[in-house]
Length: 288
Image (cartoon, rainbow, N blue to C red; front, side, top):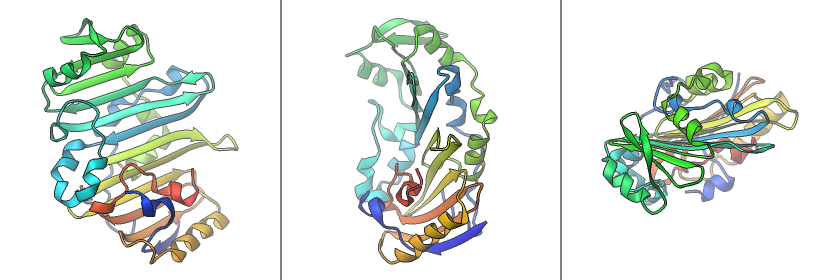
């Protein structure tokens, strides 16, 4: 795999506002087990003509514990419901699109929050419609349902009640069966914030774009992965880009990229207060 190194990055990264190293010897401690994987549904089970499957992951408690290092970036952590961020271990969002319509939208939050706090935030639009196991089931009268218990919220939109209940209680093995996701979890992991998109390129080739941010006090390390990779000419463009911008962004402490036909792997190290959480770093290279 070819490798290029630089110290800065341009473009929209310059205007956007766990302890890991880059691919140059440190380990990302990436694993396929964790909070995100068990909730991933198979998009093909809902649509035959899937074009995009998008997943986002946040650890609000990690960001709450890093307030001093985050400074102005602390306000960028999205608040999904009434629970205080420090009481939310993680939140996962799933959705996507197909030629015939959208994929189900799912939001899952786990943590130490009490059920009553979150239930109160639902009462404006939801009412109790039954029980799922030992947990109350709420609905809004259309295609949205929520299950709330101490330390858990599962919200589903775009499914029938039966399908929503099946999602909450069923087994989901899609992540362990998809080679692109296996590569993502084994190489990148999830960190304190992660996201990925499964889609196809203009030639119809299945692709994955994924990234993760890991916070270690005043330093945040980001890793971004694209599968498949690029040819030599496109890889040289990436190398040239890093070389051209190596002194342009003060917040970026180091950067390196590796590439071959199988994947592109980008490693960045930021000052935590200026890290662009939620942004796929490779999108700034024109790799979408």
